[in-house]
Image (spheres, rainbow, N blue to C red):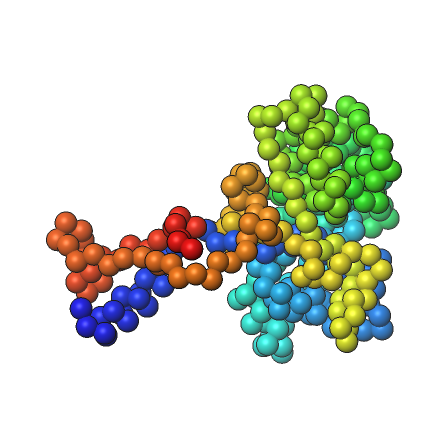
Amino acid sequence: MNVKEINDVYNNLNNKFQGAKVVKIDLHIHTPASKCFEKAGNTEDFCYKSLVKEAVENDIKIIAITDHNTFDGFNKVKHLLNDQNDIEFQKLQKNICILCGIEIDCLSKHLLAIFDVTFKEELQQKFMIEIGLNENCDVVDTYGPSKLVEIIEKYGGIAILAHVDAKNGFFEEFSKESIFSGRTIAKLLREKALCGIQYCNDLAKIKIEELIKQKDYLGNDTNIAFLKFSDAHGIVVNGKYTGRSGHKIGEEYSLIKLSESSFYGLKLALKDPDSRIISRIENIEDERPYIIGMALDCELFSKNFSNYTLIRFHKQMLCQSK
C-alpha cells in the first residue's frame, strides 16, 4: 500500500457514516411574536434573524420556535428563510433544523408542543381551535394537561413540560421547599405521549427524579427525558443579552445522540433517554488518538473501494489507552 492509497482509504473512511453523533438541541426559544420578548429597540426582522444566527454560531443543530400561545414566530422565521433577497440568511438552513412549536398556557402551567417543520398553517389553526386557543384567548382551560398531551400526540407532535421548577412550571412548588403531589401531575407523568421534562435547577431535578420513582407517579418501568433549554426571550446585542428572563441562546441546551438532525430522529431519541440524553460531563471530548476504521484486502468481502472493503468504527465503541 503506497502513500496515495493510504490517503484515499483515510479520506473515504472519514466520509462513511459513523453512527449517531452527540449534538446540541434547544427546544424552547421565543421570538418577537411573544409579548414578553425584549427587542431592545431592534426591528423584528433583525431579532428573528439574530436568533437563528446565534443558534448556528453556538453549534446548536435543532431548535424549536415556541412562542406563547401562537405559531406566528415560527411562520415568520420560515418566511424569512425563504426570502430570495437574503441569500446569506438562507444558507443558515444547511446548518440547523428549525422546528415548529408553541408554548401553551394550560391552567396556569406551561407546556411545550413541538412539531415537524412540515406542520403547515392550516394544521396549526386546526390544532389551536381544538385545544381552545384563538386570537382572543391566552390560556387553555378546556382540557387538563393530560388530555392536552394526547391531542399533541394525535397531531404528531412532541409534548414537553416547560421549566417545571420555575414560574408557571408543573413543579414550581419545589422551589418553595414543599412537595408537590396530586392526581393530576401523577396522571400526566404516566402519559406515554409525554416526551420530556424541561428543568432549570439541578437540585430540583434530583427531587423530581426521586418523586417520579414512586409507584403512584411514574414507577420504575418507564423513563422520561430531563432536558435543559435556553427559554430565550431576547437576543445578544453588543455582547449583552436583551431578555428579562431565560438565557441567551447557547448558554443552556441539551446534548442528545442523533443519527440525523431531524424531527423524526429527535422523537425517537427522546423515547430512549437513558442511552440518548447525554450530560455535559459525559460529553467531554477525548483528544487522544483513536482508530477510525480499517480497510480489508480480502476476497471474503465484497470490494466496494479499489481493492479494499472499508469498515468505519464508532468513536464511542473504542477502548483508548492512557
